Length: 155
Image 1 (tube, rainbow, N blue to C red):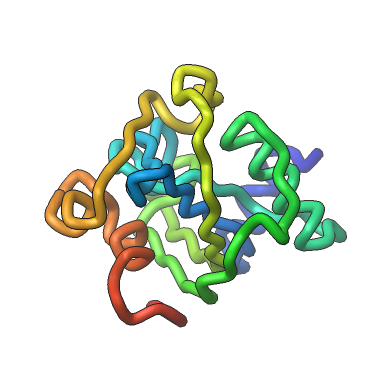
Image 2: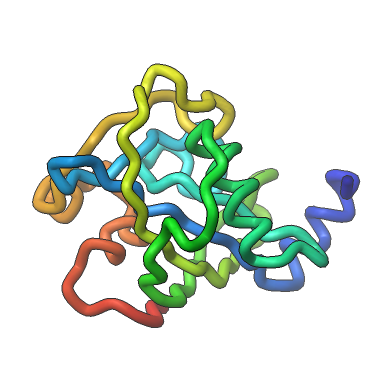
């Protein structure tokens, strides 16, 4: 485990690689959580997490789905949507430098009870229709990208 100071140095000087999960229910709605932490604090955002050093992408997918959705899923359960680039004006520790993510976006079906979702990153969860996602100023623009028609690299 990295110390907070070392992780702060890494975030300040390098991009992070992450997986975002576009979890959909039977009604094609997307699961969003209201973020508790920086970056994107206070916005509604899809679940996701960082890939760790030396972690294989399929292993990261299983760990992130376990941590974010409460159930480990295999990468074959997801449909790869593309690579996205996220830039934030702040970082996990404050506003003294930016955060840069390279994100692998995966869509997957998810039908579990929202009451059992982990509370560490999101204060509350709910299902959103695509039109609600695109129309709401409470949904972060990086999440809005996932439901827009043009998929792929976003800056």
